[in-house]
Length: 295
Image 1 (tube, rainbow, N blue to C red):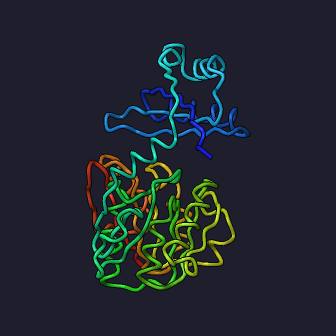
Image 2: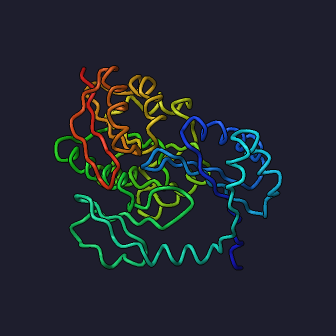
């Protein structure tokens, strides 16, 4: 059976406040349907908003919603197109090459035989969930994890916002210890669990659906000696307080998903709660941070 095409709508907004306002409206309207809304900040500060639909959307309705929440000028810039799913998967696989990051190598199934025996291989295919290892944030997190593991053997590990599960799988394969992985997105929860099993880490990685630290699983599995969180700058700042409450003394925290110019604000949020920055990696305009709880 051939995969169905995906229908897409794209437009841009001038700032984060506008993006949040519009995304909130669109998410509320399309929550029950087969649709997904995503917003990403560009290096110039503008935000790109993309909607994916399983069925062709009502273009007039969508323009009205955007016009109501962002103005007629923004609504006029809406661009609609259709993506053939199989073409995107094929193209993505052709472009993906193994990504080394310290002791780790992230690869697709087509490169399984190209990984050196002395590396910890993590097989991740292009999927709906975020994190194939090719983004600068994922690679930065893996490099910082490799650094941490040269000096410590964390017993309780959390992968917050796991996406494809790559970071939790990396920690589990290196430590052979239990890892709690969480994500707000149901497809990510499913994909991460499948990837953990594929990488023979299913016995170590437990994936749950959760928003922030709301689920009781965090208290049961913590306090954590190591937290990996590759999400976005604003959620990272908002989660600083709740995260600290789930950290063990002297715990290490690896944060990413933030543009380099956003790093000072994120560092300040965690420094205010007793964490000290130890390392700051910058890759392709993105930052990855290693911090440690003092006491």
